[in-house]
Length: 96
Image (tube, rainbow, N blue to C red; front, side, top):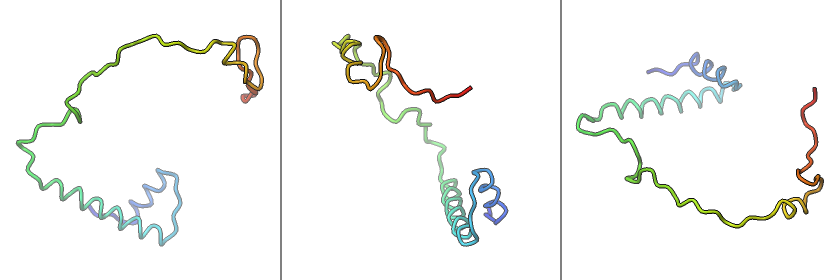
């Protein structure tokens, strides 16, 4: 596959990026090297290779679910800059 200026510009438009001429030339070379590498991988014979479904032999490893002590609501709210008896108060950021 040949990487040309039109492809680089199309990718830049899709990514909403702007490049100058020197950057486009550099990116074009980088993309061409990546595509050449991937095409080289296509030359490998993978007929006897099974697909890799998991990176490890571990499957569905779960930890034991245990209830641990926690802090109370009052302890959690005592250092808050602004709070009610039950909740943290935060500044309003959405205006209607």
